[in-house]
Amino acid sequence: MKILNAMIGTVLVALFTTAAVAGDDTQKDQSNADAKFQKMDRDKDGKLSKSEAKSDSVLSEEFAAVDQDSDGYVTEAEYAAMVQEPSQTSPSQRQRPSSDYDR
Image 1: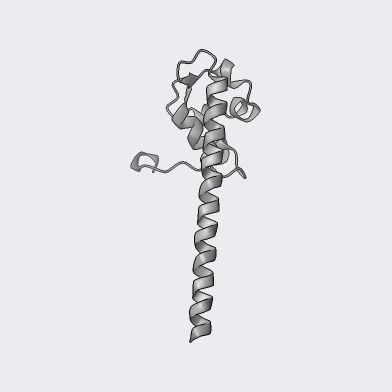
Image 2: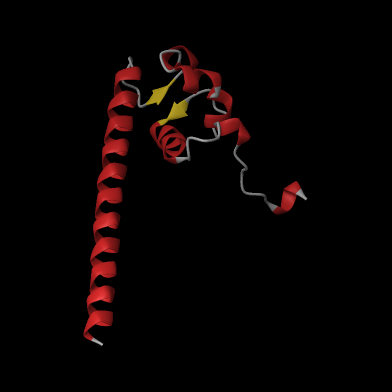
């Protein structure tokens, strides 16, 4: 019984440690994304135009897909959503949630 308790304790410590490290990485990624957005936003209006987005090849290529509301600008929230998505797929390959109107 003592061995089982020790094993459970070890697993719990490993899980909490992994979660803490993953959280730190997520915060670093978000911080880096925020800094990059601010650097690209040359006119400091809180959104990126197509010309401002040209400094980021992925964003420039996928601008229309990242611009979720199709207003011609990428907001900080839209950029953050792009950064948080898994990097295996580009924004144009990601599935968007369907609505009743899509059926």
